Image (cartoon, rainbow, N blue to C red; front, top):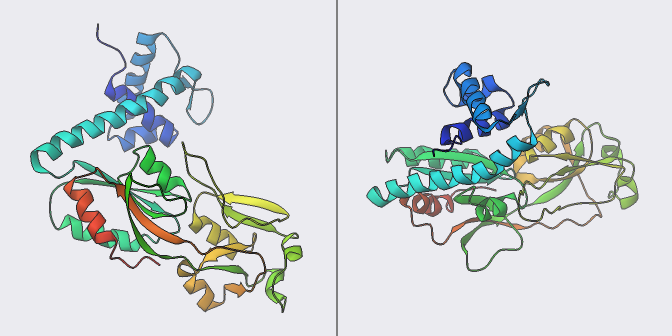
Amino acid sequence: MQSPITLDALRALDAIDRKGSFSAAAKSLFKVPSALTYTIKKLEDDLNVVLFDRSKQRAQLTSAGKLILEQGREILIATDKLESAVKQLDSGWERNITISRDTIIPLAPLLESVFEFNKLEHGTNITISEESLGGGWDALHSNRTDIAIGVSDHLPKGEYQIKEIGRVDFLFAVSQDHPLAFIDRPIEASDLLLYPSLIVSDSSLLLPTRDTGLFKSKQQIRFKTMQAKIEAQTMGLGVGFLPRHLIKQQLTEGILIEKKCTAPRVNPPLFIAWHKDNDGKACEWFARELVHNKWL
């Protein structure tokens, strides 16, 4: 008996959950909304369950929908890997490759490498994703990515190829109008207790999450990306440590002010990592080229 849970249905569920609505999901799948609605309705009828709570503005999965999608995503990942393996077996070039970039890493050098790769005209589909803190290792561990740029700390041994790309220079910075900008001495721990601290959250899904650069403060405000933290800190929403290579312009223009701070902050080395057993030609090309880019 043929299962009603098809790959098309799983892709539809995944898209709706990620995009938040049937119309946005249909657009991402290059389908009309009515086709997506029919796919989900047929799956619900065949299984005799409700998969989405349609009473709210954003389409939300029911418990049954979450169960199907959670296990269905593993099927989708396995299917994509199988398709990629078949193509690679024939030509050596992967059908798809995913490169994750920690949000502390600038995007431009990666785009330059993609531009050069496309000159080879091998037709490999490229997905560029964003991770934060331990999210890069998590993406490699769960096979969400083929190459992770900007991973650091607790380097796994034996399973991955790892190349250092530089060391981050973190500095304590405040908005030009922030009260701490007018203190003519090093910032003390007691000063930090008066203001919110801005933090980038770990994007790990499976591995334990971690935090860096934490200090006692009045309040913690968390962001998914370093870019969002920089924007909020420039507005004066809070304080914290920022990577020098991403705020050079703000420092030059005086929008952000560098201050000496007694709170400790480690300046870690960053790495590019990929699975040792990944012998695809696209992964090999990017791994070889990316280590030569200027990232920091």
